[in-house]
Length: 250
Image (cartoon, rainbow, N blue to C red):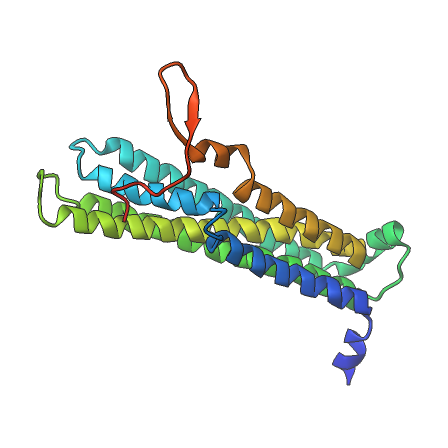
């Protein structure tokens, strides 16, 4: 009964806003990773290039350049993992002082909601940060697996096992990047969830805005236009052609 009474502190608009938050978050990830054939996403195109990169690895004797790229990718995941860990710690610290948040939020929203309401809103933010942390940590580990597989690719030209191991490295690389991108989307929507402290309508607005930002970057950004271009001509002009996966990609 106490739980039901506590949940009754939230309005129907609050429930609609939270359902939109989690629903759009999951829908956005699904759409980016499973784009329609007529509108491929940046993430899907980059996955093809990651696989092609591992195939090209088998043709190089000196692979220092490749190891540096993987190291940079791991550093990026480590940075975000550290950042989300700090965010989780800060979130739990705020949970222990939710009454102070109540005072600040009351000044902004003129709301006298009990501390329980603000604690729930903080927990949602911490949940997104926790999910992002887990994704970044797993991505970091997968990039480590990729580095090991890259090192296992024989340097002997035409070695029968070289391409097979390179293909495995390419798949692991793509999986690591997918986990990394999921972590980033959790960060985006976690930041959007902070608007719930102001009110449900602010949350709905920020969720829609975050969705539009992500969709633009994946389906209508300048970087996507560049990836859709063919090789640059000597004069620096680009001739656009429909995108197709590299011939030697997996």
